[in-house]
Image (cartoon, rainbow, N blue to C red):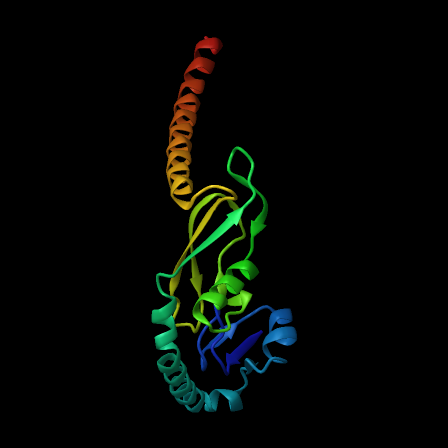
Length: 188
């Protein structure tokens, strides 16, 4: 199904673009939400009008949220969580947890859908992106440390576990490289 976008849609396109989408996506989501219309001859005649209106709307929103994006950029959120000896969390840090903590820190409503991150299930440092608009996507830093430990010891432990993982990966490659040689020797 071909549709013409009337508003910017994340990971699909900007207003005025003509896109080919799955029938169900267009019929059940884009058109009812008012994000797109069917790409008919009459709709295509209005493409320039829609693009110019969207550009004005986009620049107004971007200028409005520019200060907020600068405020969010580089924010560090810390979470204390229960974890096993291997550094794996009992549970996870979800996008809702990140949005709530960020909302408390910057005093601006951030929805969980705006947080671009997978649930965090290990100790360590992570980055996440906050999608304010298609053009403004500030990056934040997330530090997850073990409950009852200080933040500094958690950073040291995270660096040590990363180094151990690197060694395991390298050792795994060596074992895999040596395995075919041993199989060839058995075949002879």
